[in-house]
Amino acid sequence: MPLRLVVTGSTFSLQIGFFYPPDHKAHCDKIKIAGDSHQVYEYSFERIERIGTTYLSVGSIPSQIYCVEYVNANPELRRFWSDNIPGINQTGSFFDGRNGQILQSGGKAYAGNFYYLLQRHPIYTVPADIEAMEIAKTRANSFNSWYLYKIRIKRFSERSAKFFLKYAIFLTEKPTKFYPIWPAYIQDPYFIYHNSAEFYFYLCGDDAELKSYPATANVLGTQDGELYKLCTREREQLISIGKSEALGFSYLVKQPLRKKAPLPAIIISDHSGNTLNEESYAKLPKLKCISVSCPYDGKAVVQRNGKTEYIYKLSGEEQLTIDGLSFGTEIHFYQGCDYIRSICFEQETVNMDIMVLDAVLVKKLSSCSGPMIPVTHAVGSFVSKFSKYPQTQKWLCKALRRGEISRTALNLLRKTIQNNPGRDNDD
Image (cartoon, rainbow, N blue to C red; front, side, top):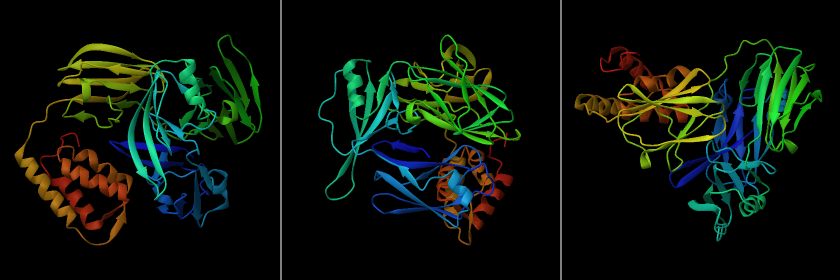
């Protein structure tokens, strides 16, 4: 159950990731999470998405361990979810700057990437090959504070490696590559679904080591890495990568392939490390450049005013910088031959009529009363239908994060989508 850091400007928060159990009997009514401060964060089981990882906030005060209580839990749930989740190490913890995931003790950091360091004391000196910038400081109580730093590795060296080693993190130049090869499979975060008696993995890197529980792995060997063959006698197996699972793990689940695989995540960020999740922006990013990282090889097609200007090669698990951005630029991102997402930068044209309608609609939504109902996936799809109504989108996103919405407000949104002539034509 991964711990993630979310940085917004000069503030941060922590989140714990939950995956939907593959066994339909594994469920509970509520999830209660408490840290060292004893503040309890309570969530309904219905908040957990069936695809991917659902991250639940545990506030901005770090904890060394998070205790989780599952209310009215089926015993099967304990097979997949833990009661105790490790938090921030006593000496401090690193987080991947691209996705916010915590680096566990014994994990690896890679030269050329940037990371966040969260610890109890300030940094006074760093090696010349490392750049440290304080992002935030938060007070846990009257005696303790937490400091968040952005760490950039300017050059791989003995001094920079020793800096990470103080936190039980190994700095290396080449990342470990882990690829499921055969048979056909569907991969979610932490789950690999298949329907075969055998499964093949390829693993390559300085610390390439794969283990399975129950143990069935056979090493076949290749020139540049190692090919592993697993006999999947059990319905479920745990696959760990690296020594002491430091580089990650996955559940290998044997079942009929009736699931849909999620699209690979392409992470786009600006020069300050802020993630760009929207498809369209009316402002150019800082220094007119963006950084792109993706799990697999692919390409980025840069178009200006509808004409292809340049095609960049994307390498899996590596970061690419695209600069020289201007208004009228649109970039399409591919993984392999598959189109995944796009981002464009265009100057905003202000329509006063839409601005007035947007303000009036938000005022009506804010005044709606009546019974509150849970937010469904269908309600989440409304966000894209109000792309020309930024205030309404903001109000709706707050309702989605809250997890509930007034029934009266929901009916008003539906009626607006049906009758509003100013909505997007493709809706």
